Image (tube, rainbow, N blue to C red; front, side, top):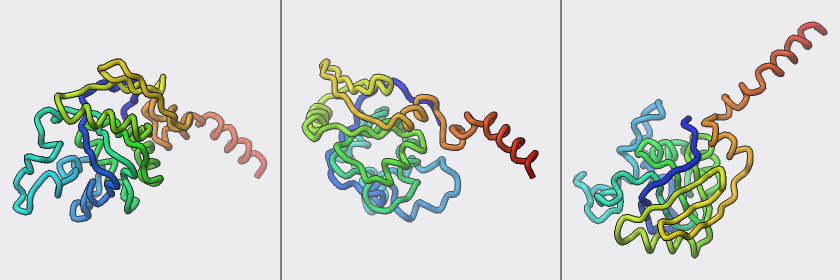
Length: 197
């Protein structure tokens, strides 16, 4: 995983509530066994019409948001099934951060474990970001170390994160790499155990 600390980007305002994982990546695209290549299927049925043509009215098809690294959505983002492909597709598309008032628990955990930073802000703060993001391209800076989101207008919103996940994201570690930080202690324990058998 890539370390995350500061992410400064235009936001992509997805002004929708209860975005479920089947909308994030539909079940027919879950046949791949690797973690890459899912980005082109992100929000596929919102980004395309029934014939597969690009839906010009959808936010991710708007040129203003093509290079956005920060997705902003409304409450209960990532509800539905527990598919890990959902954060994979968001990351593979190019997003590093998702901001919403609330997330489904399993989706939130899957994000953390795969290097995608989910940030919970107050409903009023998210609504301000969504409103400002609907017009001209609007930038914010996320600072994980400081646990802040700072807008281009100078407003700063604070967010909380579990220290365990914060350490993982700042260092770009997954849970296996986190375990390797204790490799010397694990080896010493194994050697001690071997001597007593």
